[in-house]
Image 1 (cartoon, chains in turn orange, cyan):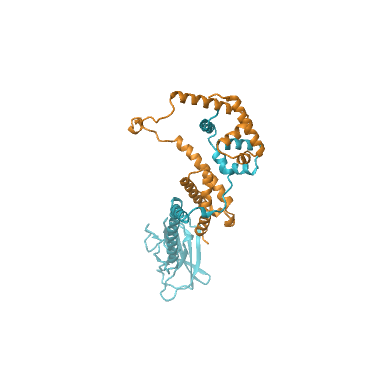
Image 2 (cartoon, helix red, strand yellow):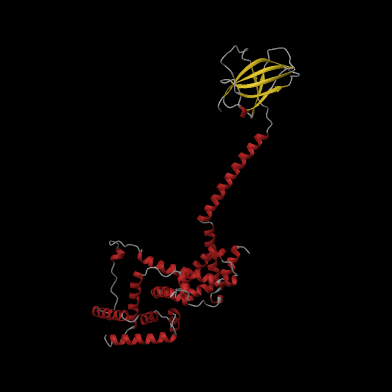
Amino acid sequence: MTKDERFEAIYRRHYARVWRYYRSCRVADDEAHDLAQDTFKRFYERIDLFRGQDEAVWPFLETIALNVFRNWLRAGKTAKRSANIVELDDPEFTYEPPAPEGPDYADREQAALRRGRLHQAIAELPKGQKDCLRLWMEGFTFEEIARSLRITLDAVKSRLRDARKALRERLGDQP
Amino acid sequence: MIMKSDLQAVLDQMRTEDRKTRIEPPTVDEMLAYRAGELSGDEEARVRELLICWPELLRALMTPYPDDDAETLPPEVVERQWTAMRSQIGASRGGRVLNFRNALTAIAATLAVVFGGLLWQAKMELLRPRALPQQILTSDVRRGGSDSVTTLDSRGEAYLLVPTLSDERTFERYHFEIVDAANPQRQVGSGDLPRPEGDDTLAVMVPRASLPPGRYKLILYGVNGERKEQLETYTVQVLRR
């Protein structure tokens, strides 16, 4: 079997699985396809390094997929930093669309104050509680938090309970 | 009361602040070692800190790989992606790196052809039968002591010297000596010559390496028994190539 034939067989067998992996990482559908393609392109470049049986290709693919995902996240950050500079005279830039209906100035000020206090309260939490709370806010389940922080499920529940209590005590019924 | 939108806004702000100071996420090796529990206490804490700043990576790291569920994508989607992939790897195959290799191969092949041709030409040149040019030598007496001397033709690996004889006597054999013209004591070569037959000519073959550039005298003797008589002297010169 030639290199290309071997690659095609692995691609057809595992493409959907890699795509699903990215989808489970909460990547949008189109981007998951792009990342899966990048993963297989890199795999093609390194296929000679993979000595095992094709059935055991997963660990190899996982490392590549994780690397691709890491670079993609970093590139997203880089893209923001290196965003195009907009000319001030550009009519597209100076065009002011009608203001959408939304909270008025006082509401925005109040929200900013609330968030400032919440930010401060979270920052002052003990580190273990703060880490659990952040991951919980990111949408991790208790089990995922436990695995991620390498602590027990009970520890996660306990820390989160303590964190909520501390925040309530700190913020009370403040608006 | 804590509102969900406030939590989300604070979370985004914290992530942004964190990534200002922790720009680089952990490496894949570090992440895999973290998951496998292979890091020391300090290293584990450092990687965990980074992963909390990059929760997307943490999620990817902790997400178990889905089962082999190739059926979840319609075959036509996989086919479309494969077509795109095939064109991509086809492009990379014809890309810069491989072109560079092709160019190197082409240069190497050209050089091989050129050098092969030169080698073949040289071999054929060596194999070609070649008659050494005869160098007819006129004796110094005949030339009347003129300064003009015979310049040896430097083609070939040897000189074929043919001294002309004015003495009509015949000898049992002949002998020659070649000496440095500037220093006659320094003999460069010597040898016996058989009695000429047929065309009555003598021929002396001298390897070219024996005569570096300079001026030489070839002295010819006639030998009868024990008696050796000097017959002629021939001055020749070898020029620098």
